[in-house]
Length: 188
Ligand SMILES: Cc1cc2nc3c(=O)[nH]c(=O)nc-3n(C[C@H](O)[C@H](O)[C@H](O)COP(=O)(O)O)c2cc1C
Image (cartoon, rainbow, N blue to C red):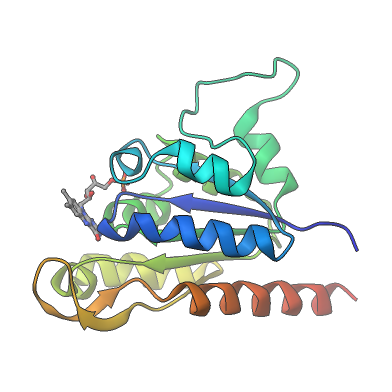
């Protein structure tokens, strides 16, 4: 079977370090994982870590065009079997819901082709998650085809207890594989 391409967008949540385990797990399962990072995400986890685990280049800059015969963000979106943002910050969710494309994650999101599964795994403080603006943005993303991998209730890094912790790596991998299988079935 053809190797599946997963585009993993990483934004600047305190839980960005968990993207390393997620990248590792998906790569071990045989997926080609192309990691996209926001500029702020690179302050939480280095591209080198994710590059070493995915064994592929990590994309952090829309304007870094290393292959003159292609436009990187379009080419990545074209190859994708699934696009997932994990963790997704309130800021990145807001950008995706409003068509803002000013970093690698939001720019590739805009270029994803119709029919390609899209998923979002929010991670943030409970009050940020419950904020009506964030809830409206998430509702809109779901309306246009994104599946939410819901955050867990937990003691959060900020000291508040509540919903907002990134879903576990196991939950995210399971959600991705379910989505890929459903998409395969719908194309049979
Ligand atoms: C220590 C720290 C932890 C943060 N954790 C989160 C988080 O879990 N979720 C979130 O939405 N924003 C969080 N933020 C705020 C985002 O980093 C900030 O909104 C940033 O602009 C998001 O950038 P990005 O969406 O381009 O990656 C955190 C900021 C700091 C300094």
